[in-house]
Image (tube, rainbow, N blue to C red; front, side):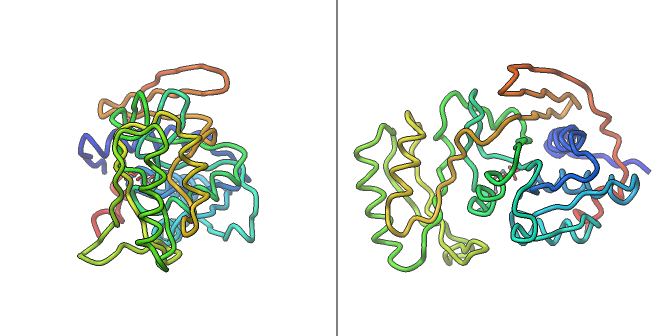
Length: 262
Ligand code: 5RP
């Protein structure tokens, strides 16, 4: 039986499906977090269950680890598999150099560690995530709960000396209480509008006591797979400079997203 997806899910699904096409038997894979990455885990699960693909995944969040296990994707920790062949993840923004903002889902710390520990990173996204310069999406920064208001003040002071348009930070809340990352940390979202020099900002942020990591992924991503709701995907490789287009079959089996309807 086939199932109808919303336009947004179709775009995510085709990007995920194409990216999973780069996965080969025996690979150690970093599994991203978020709604687009969840499609990647579903497509991967289908290849494992129905086509006998042999891979091992390292998840970037408890959510992804749970989904992967539910769908039959073997999971190990990064300590068990300290280096990976490929990470596939979503993003909140990507620019022409494939620099990214990530962490909208609050998993930026594990995502950055896992992507950095991979030979290659592929981002899966839809065209709305593409920007000329990073910063319209609030930049997530993971901070230690101890003294977070001091850390926030130090960040806002530092922002006065870098080339950004906005200069405020807000504590991320969920249900009226501070959001906690899988590590138990808080997230500050920085409203910057435009980041002129992401490298300088990333360095300055990570020098502030209390900052654990920021959501700028610079020089980490190798390829972006952009899906659209008409079933087309664009694959951009930053190293070769190649851009290819292809159509992906959007007729999906209902078993592929049984977890979404639970
Ligand atoms: C989670 C992330 C996600 O990859 C990012 O927020 C994109 O999510 P989605 O695919 O749901 O739009 O960085 O921390």
